[in-house]
Length: 403
Image (cartoon, rainbow, N blue to C red; front, side, top):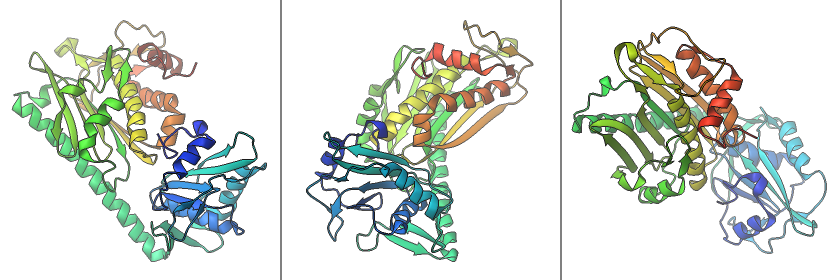
């Protein structure tokens, strides 16, 4: 992991020095400042431009040349109190609406020097500099790293995001199409798979591949997480995955029945499909414990995935359960006192969608999972209290819930 993706609380002075020694030049996602500029607006402009474009890292305490290359010695600025607060004051005094960043003051061992690391997430808003009433974007050019856009050009910024949304939908559509083709090849009637659950997560505004597609097989092994429920590592059966355009996918059968399907691609998509129901007709039951485990696994694996891809921007999560009309729900042999099953599900299909940043997912994983499960369980015709939802998660996939 690098300073782009390592948990910010774990970043050390030596991490920053080693990063600088790689001599990565400034660009669309990286900016160096020798110290806090005399004019606060200059720092605010860089932060706002990152947020208005694709996010980025601002490193204060590093001198750079005219081409944006970091220049040694890499020592930082004199360590003094209030550095963290100064960044926040600059943001809240100069940018509207404010940008919510990650800030870490990284001190040397003798506490005489420090780097100030500011990680800026991509934002949905157009952030304006109060003094200039201007919207800036990050260009990636060393001679002109930030560029002001006119009110009319904000439409262009929105249009660029629209194109990213269209790209995102085309990526989803291609994966859905691939799954349907797998089903046809194996003579499986997709519409007859009871409780077919789809879970996916990917960047909200994809722009370009985040990694070479031929590196995806190695990534799949590196993001692996152990499942307490499945007694296996997820993604499952990586060695059996097939190469497909932009990544890999795995379509697994047991006795000619779908066991699971997952896919990873170079745009940052993690997609999983699996039946979560057993029986038919009057005995048709959706297994809430299986949905719970899958949500936990996809989130844990995706955190590792985006760390490997050095991506910390906005994410979109989707969950869909199909072919469930008339089903009841249960949690297997896990007894939850507050859970009360009402009527069978009247809907043929249910779907949910959430948007959050990588940082939100990293910091509030348990809260995000509980929020989603509360909605899922309610929609499945089950009443249940939050304490039992948390117990269910803790029982199935330990390590998610804080101690």
